[in-house]
Length: 291
Picture 1 (cartoon, rainbow, N blue to C red):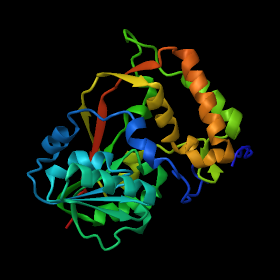
Picture 2 (cartoon, one colour; picture 1 turned 60 degrees about the horizontal axis):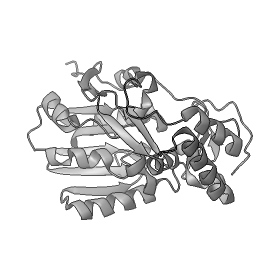
Picture 3 (cartoon, rainbow, N blue to C red; picture 1 turned 90 degrees about the vertical axis):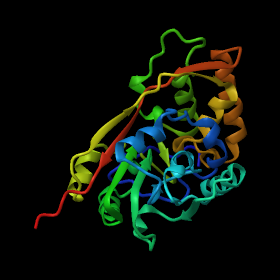
């Protein structure tokens, strides 16, 4: 709803609602920056995966990471509360002929939800939306012996690590996009029906409090230069929770026209470039129970 007044908006007071990513699913795969090509191999090597066991991908969205990792397991389950995201995941699974994945429309807070035990539980740019202590505790109880929880970072979540030097085109005009968003939606960063201007950190402390050993980081090298079109940047904008299509109401077309205007002003050729930072996996294993 355009024009919502800003509120303190800290993540501690924010409450999830089902409109968080409403309308974003069709834009997600095109809009989001890609993960490093070696992501699956890095996870396999770090956890000595051998094709056995099951994967649970929490907050899977349209299956971006689920599909990358499914071949490492006998079965993979993607869990997400957004039905539109899972519709996209099912369509992609049929197109790709991925036989060992199924999708569950549910919040992570409902775990264990009768899903059984898993060798690996992944959270790819999703944990910050959850009741983290509750989900971490549930995850620990759902791991088979030797299993692990793994947070998979997303390239766009570490903007300070982008290297903008020696690129064939300039970067997307992020400051102009943010100013335009504020003009349409107000000063607060929208998240569903309310505002959330901050995001939690300290994931390692959360997992340790839930009975895990300290996390171990695995770097997945990247550094590729990705050229983005105007349509890609529009899709990236509409794939984000704070600029999800539903937030603009009957001004959605007006916002898109203005957004494209900003992009053309920044790059008359309609091309932008990004050098992708490395990905980071953080692996938590349950602490051994004392006798």
